[in-house]
Structures are given as structure tokens and as C-alpha cells.
Image (cartoon, rainbow, N blue to C red; front, side, top):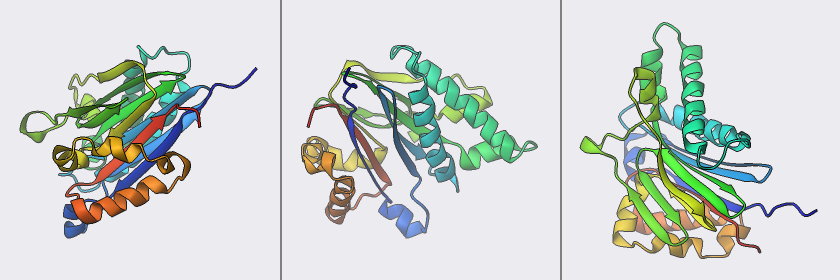
Length: 238
């Protein structure tokens, strides 16, 4: 019996010029993992007004990907709610493990981040998350708004009692899926087809370093103001 085809994946991330100017770290996170016939990609974007949000963003990307991939008994339709509940519970344990007496301060300084997640099983995929960025599914680009006053809905706000629910951006067949943090906004406004062109390069799927190199070259021209992170999956046979 042959094993199901596992999607190819590629990721890239770079620090925005504004964070370079301010001497701050890249506040995005990215992680891709597989378990059985499920492959999960996650990108996160830390709250820019907080000093150490890259900590939560990077740990959160890994935690979300690993926990979501492990939910093999959960249907793709139910996965967004269950996975985000798991991430909220993990975040609550994490911030309280750091400091019980002032967990709220730890959450605000370290644990606020947007999250976009794609879970692929065979030819089916669900894309969901909370916050802004961009989603690309089989040639269709969806730009996600950051909300009123440029204040994204962080899942971490659940720990303060806010009813933050995940939004489902795609559920159904998909062969190529990409997630991006909001650092791509200006780039995609100027060139809406740029992401599709980038992912059409066969080397992006066969050379693990290629997408990062291409993004670095693009940065010489585009001068990305904000941190910019991409994660993509493709189930095409090669």
C-alpha cells in the first residue's frame, strides 16, 4: 500500500526596515510540520507595540503547527475551533509558568500575536486564523484586514475574556496554499500577482533555501517596511 503524497513546503522570513532602524528583532514566526497524512503550516506576527512579542510569535507558530498536526481525529471542518482552543490553553499555561503573580503583563509583553494556519490532508485543506495578513489558495489571493484602528484580533485576548473566534478563509480542495504576514501588503498592492509568480518558480519547491534567497533579493527593490514572512504548501506530484 503506497503512502499518501506529502505536500512540498517552503518558508521565508525577513526583518522589516523599520525594525532594522529601531534595532528590534523580527517579530514574525513560521513553522511547518507533518504527521501522518496531515501537513500544517503556520505564520504568526507579534504585536508591534510590545517589546518582546517575537517570543510568543515564534513559540506560538511551532506550538500551533505541532498541536494542529496531532489532531488527526478532528475533521478539517472542526479543526479551526479545536486547534485555536488548544493554542489558547497552551498560551495560558505558558504565561502562567513564566509568572503567576502578573500573568497579564507577560501576556501583553510576550504573548500577543496574529496567527494564520493551513492544514492539508491529501487534496483537501482548511485555512484559518485570527488577525491580518494574506492567504493564497490556487491562484486566488485574499488580503486580510487588521480591523478598526489597526488592531488585529489576537487569540491571546481570550485570556482577558474577549470572545475571539477563528475565521475560516478556505475549506475544501486545494493544491497550492500560501500564508503571509502583513509585511506583504505594500508589495501585493503594487503587484497583486507577485506572490503567484514567486511560487511558480520550481526551485521554490525543490531547494529549501530558494524562497528565502528570492525574498532577500526582492527586499533590495521593495524595501519591505514591516517584517515579512511566507509559508507555502503544494501537493503537486514532482
